[in-house]
Structures are given as structure tokens and as C-alpha cells.
View 1 (cartoon, rainbow, N blue to C red):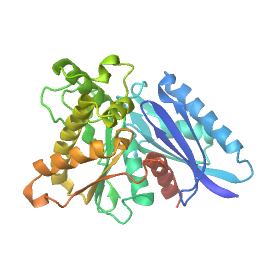
View 2: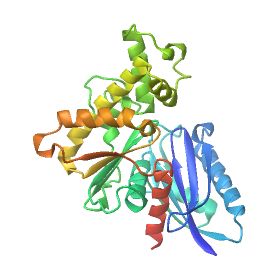
View 3: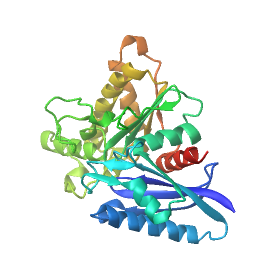
View 4: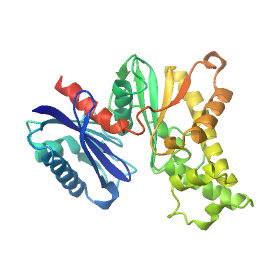
Length: 320
């Protein structure tokens, strides 16, 4: 019987999981809507039930040995999600303890920040193979980051290092979900680009098909489709988003000099629309000693879910 682990990526909108062996092969996948469960216990029971149903479909072929979870504000040291601004659960929740309760204490369970999980996935299975210094930027509902230095994930003394989405890039700027103003996440994320679109709609007179949408109805995918179709305002939104992100990456370079930044997540699937302005503005603003040295790349695992693979890789590392 094949030993497998489940990798779980807890997103602000959806929770995605995959049943994965040590080589990164998938034996089943699924998802539940994170926002549909107002309490942590409701969510935990639902994700457990979905995983068990998927395992049942391969009954006799595979054996679950561990659970790896990537989540916003997931603390590797405590096993808790701590005050995640993009989740509906308040305070600290004991994810590792709950997973052991539901799946059995004989199962290994480990938690980390969702962006850290994506970085582990990129390092083990993706474009960062062989790299010792790189940063993964996850562009989803919010903006996360996983920082790897000298081949080691940076957790910090309390497990909360690497929250580059909450570096202030605009003093007195947009209100962020964390309660502060001007964080990068408020500009460079699926939510951020929506806010940019509506600012442009208010300040520009140019025609745009985006004017037909309400804020709640508009998605970053719609903005992408309109940009591909040539909508000028949608193109301006990607330019502004790339500008903010590129300027921030220029500053981030100074503290760890990564070989590469990897862009991962829904917004990164816009490809060159986000990649090109990000690279351009990074080079325009970067310190001269770093010019033309740092790569900005799209994740090689965007279609394979680096966060799920990373969470699974984390579980395998605990088992080895």
C-alpha cells in the first residue's frame, strides 16, 4: 500500500487539498469554500469529511500517514493560525491539535504560513530547485511571501517572519485588513487590483466595460479578461499593480538578495500583464549593485498548486 500525505492550502476564498506521495504524484484532489464556514470547527469537520471521502475512493491503494497545512498566519512553532485577517475565524485556532483529533493522534500534522508552503513546493517540485536564496510572492485574496535564505525557510523567532504583504509602501494609504494603512497587500493582490480599478473608474473618463460591474461582482479574473481584450482601464490597473509590486520587490532585494522572486497565485496567472510591469518597475527602483541580477519569474507550479505540494512536502519532511 502506497504511503501518502494530504497537503491542505487554506485560502481566504477556498480551501484546496491534495493527496500526495513522496514524489509529488497526486492521488486525489478537492476543495471546500472557506468562507462558507463561520466557525473554525465547522470548517475543520468539513475539510476532514472531504478528505476522507477522497481517500475512500482509493481504498486499499493508499495509506494516509500525515497532514501538512498551509494557512494565512499559520505558525510553524505553535501549530496555530494566529489572527488571520483574511479568514472569518477570530483569534488563535489550534489547527494541528484539531487535525490530530479528527484524523488520529498517530498521524503527523504540521502547519506553516500558506506562502511558506508555496515556497517549499517551489523549492522541492518547481522552479526553485537548486536555489538557496529566493522569495515566493503569493498573489491571492491577500499577498503572502515565503522567504528562503541559504536553503532554509525563514520563520523568525516567533514563527511569523516574512509577512512582506504588510510592509507599508504608501504612508497614509489604503486601509489594509490588518488594520494599518498603506500595506502592499492593499495594492498588489486580487482585492488590491479591484480597488485600483474602482479608483481609476472614479478618476478617469475613458470608456471601459468594467463600468458595468459592481464592486462585489467584479473579480480579478474579469479584469484580466478585459485587459486581454484591450480594455484600456483594465490595462492601466495591471500597470499600477505591477508598479507597486515592482517598487516593493526593489526594496525587498536589499535585505536578502534573492536569486529570484517567484510570483504565484490567481493574480500571477495573468502572466506578462503582471510580470512585465513588475520587472520593469523593480529594475527602475532597485539599488545599482543589484541591477540586472535578480530574476522575477512566474511559479512553475501555478497549475499544480504549489501551496498544496508545499504543505505536502512539509509533512514529508516531518516524517523523514
